[in-house]
Length: 190
Image (cartoon, rainbow, N blue to C red):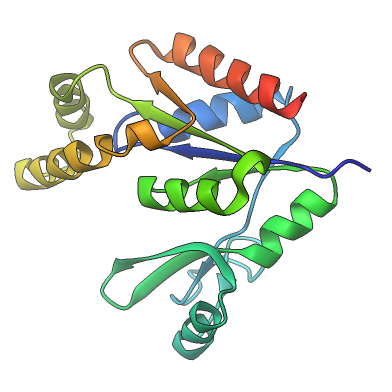
């Protein structure tokens, strides 16, 4: 059995990364599986350990960090961690499936450096900061200050684009989906 590969997709918030991934996964043309992330938050009603997340105690999460058990992790809020376990990625790849990682840009750069040619890194960018502003404001889900914070973070995250294998500008969603799908198919067929 051939070992699977790693597909890294990163983007600033509001660039359509999750929508693109869902569209490709729903087509079912590429063998890709999400890795189950680990977190130190408690399970919400209906969530199951090993299905939605690997729920770790604070001490277990810190121990996993100390023992280099993560491909990447991040403190998303003070004291609240999320990460991708090396064991989870290795298990999926070992079964011959490709692993798709929907992660922040710094994590994307780090995972690509860790796995080298076993991974492809794709950065999804907005056509412009103004377009991103329009999309975030158009959602109507956030206060103006939150939109400004996301835009400031997006400008910082855009500085990482050159460290990815490919940059796909999400100007029109169908074209962005097709371009990302083509890049993945080309990479996984090699």
